[in-house]
Length: 353
Length: 247
Image (tube, rainbow over all chains, first blue to last red; front, side, top):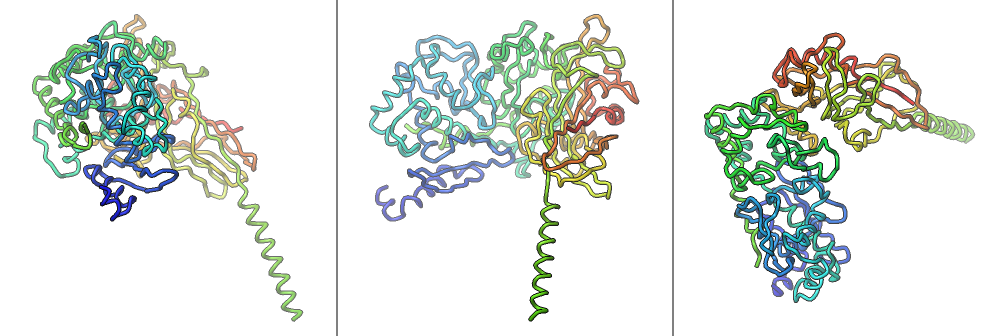
């Protein structure tokens, strides 16, 4: 590598690295502006998606993304150094896990289903109840949560500071080897913003590069109809409206957003998850009560419960949308066209250790 | 030589006058545009089943988001200054109740103000809007494509006996037909100087459901995106929904 650096020059090498790292993404803009240190700014434009909002104080860089990826997969962040973020957010499951409730380092089960980490760069809030306003704030919480990674930020910073390579990697990413909680979360957030899925078969279909079967097409049309109302909360391209709804799971719903706002009219409202890669993210709902997509569709068809805050988009008068067995099959077939195998196999997102 | 000197003086004078005229005509005033929402004379309050529509149904509003476009400042000489937009408004989000772009109007007197409710057909094209909120207003292609004009949602007590049902007043280009409409406000002439002015566009939610046609939630049901009759009634009623005030 040193030999290459000597021949090509550092800046050119960075460009090659960037092109290599992001060769699967749509468009990379590199300004290569070396201000007071040698990181390389990166912006990502994903075909068919809105412009991703990036915080002014945490511009993406190749070094920051690479550092965030290491931190995401490194158990050094947990109290006994046995779990990393990736323990509950596995790439093969679209960065979620297969458990109803994940288990932390002390063997204690959580209370809510692990969310998939996919296309989060467009979210305006995080966690099922929306209690974090940024990816950076979100990343700080599981580290110290006593039923998750059960660590202490002081210890984490000390471990990273005494690590043989992390100080220089922080220096490359942020221009300082003084490691802080803020910089750790900023690096993880940078990596998470690159976890973009927009290459499903459905995306290729929209681009005229793939066909959908008659069953899948019928499911798409049903998805877009007022008979199911799916599109209002799960419209393309993100397949989430970045909002909160009570979808009628229970007559006495869990707190959800009310736990954050204290407003009783927010009872039972949870963030709408994206349906992209939904095939990989079972179990479903905030409490992981459904194991299969068929169960989810059955719920929307026949088991929607009325409560004071149930969303007007839900058919609370009649218990559900009342779909035929064929319509249920059509919907599930369409949902599976949103699977992006390139995403779950992308080496840029995999464990670097 | 003397003629040349006189010519130069004359030219300099003309240039000076010309500059003065340009300076005067370049003077402008800033318009601070905001949006307000009422039910009758009351300020709109969300999530409270307390409003009464023309049918006599008690109803609440849980969501109100919509687009306005072509904010138009007409002059008596037939010209106009137009802010095309579309402008996304969320009645429940304080950050979406003030237009965050810049509107600078040449100082002077204007004869009226107009607005397009929704997005006119030239601009209402699928996949052209870019923010997450705007994208969430998409109107499905099988129903005509483009974007919703408005999502006004809530519940109502259909019998006055606590039998709560949903309503979803979603308007848009049903089956590709245009149901947006233009409003030119009566008595909206104004004069703007360099101090600028505040302009408020107010929606009276109740007016969607009356005048000239009483709109009964029960008649049209909760799903009206494919219902041209409902869209036409709402388009007609919409003429009296908005008002403006200038300070």
